[in-house]
Image (tube, rainbow, N blue to C red; front, side, top):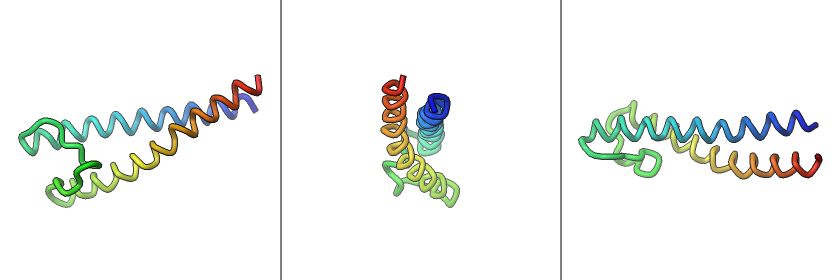
Length: 85
């Protein structure tokens, strides 16, 4: 049981890191295309130009929602794992 909880909590935290890395890379890329600093598409989807950026904005919004859910789940799994020990 301890191994399963450890793997699940690790996956939750890894997903949050994947989201943050992809969001950061996308913000730099979109900012360069818009000739500005950061353009965080999940917070400003109206700034997307073209179908690829609009699709990326939708993907980032879904990833953000799942990361918001994964972080507390990962923390809860870690606490449960420590409580079982």
